[in-house]
Image (tube, rainbow over all chains, first blue to last red; front, side, top):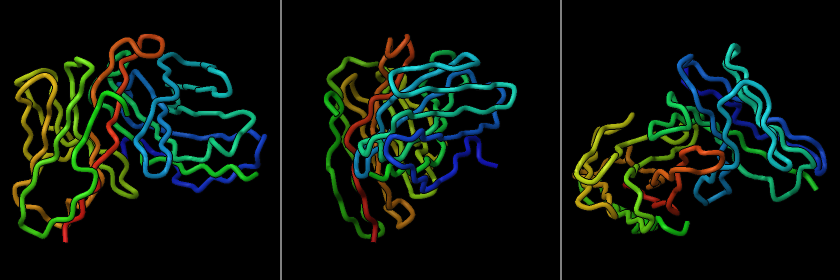
Length: 113
Length: 116
């Protein structure tokens, strides 16, 4: 079992709809959870960070964390073609993140105009 | 990718050849990392350096060596390249005090390496 699991996709969502990306992790000691976005041929960039159970909103993005179920998700509201990318889930055992991030394999999201 | 510069961007090697990937940062960060990214495998940590003069193994260190000679530069060396080392390599630094106080990784643009 991989430490961080994501559905590789591709996930196709119509423009304007809500895109829902999911991630599960196996290490119960994980404390910090990150979502990175990676455009094709580019490097990953951080879009969301969460460490408390519940929801965290930032603009059109909402991260959801459920430590009991070892589950973290990313919702993208009003999806735009520019949201088409691969989304990487990453977890860390330390508070606020440190060097030993463990990444999932990523979910490829395509927004259909 | 302002602040983290990787060279070269592309490289083709023959099996058994050696090469060094260079990474330099101008953000005065202590921690630097080397990841590799392969289809279906995600990003995997090869080596990291928490400070100048220190290095530690990550998840997949075999076949690689690193050098952190100063705070700015962290190099990754392949002594005898193998086809299994064909990958995209990313250097990253750790930024303190990112969004909501998180420490976040800032990646370089990547180096695409092909070993024939």
